[in-house]
Length: 234
Image (cartoon, rainbow, N blue to C red; front, top):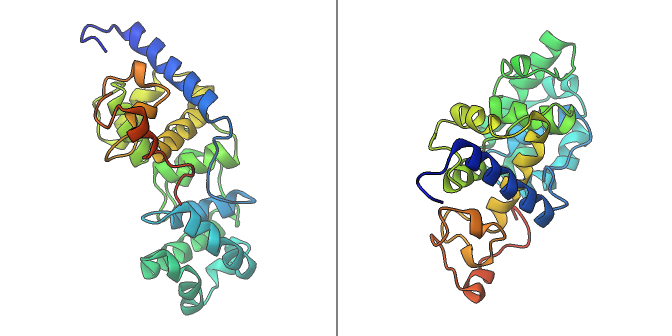
């Protein structure tokens, strides 16, 4: 994009990119399986440094044993560790789930709060996790700044910020609040499938014409097509 791009021009370009990504990924959604706010909160915490596919695989066993905060708070540590073991960092994740569930029971009568300011007080819950829960379980607009989202908004030239909170606020100013949750899904899906951290598939990118970083990866359509992933976090 031209160095002299105006603020209005950037807003229009950003919204155009989001519209095209919405058309490209009409099924974009949270790729973690869940049936209620508690499940989404737990699986989001578990998804750190592992894949959604692995978390989804242990989810049925986990919630069959511990369907609510009360039962999970009372869980025997070794049994909980066995269930989350395949996800890696199982001791730390078990500790997080125990403390998180206990806090929900003690502070919120076993209910997941529907406000950002309450969610971020829970053990192991930061703004990213809170926004995932708000946007997908409570229909409260939120921007989820994960590694994919941060990478793409910088490549698109929407911000130069690297701090997740600053990124969240900067991007929030470019889009109507009602669009925040789906914007997050669109960018995360695109980052997982085409706009990879290494070797982005530029030649297969539907928004290449509006991207200042076009050319960081192969621009040849055949070479780029080989880099495209048909699923997200496999």
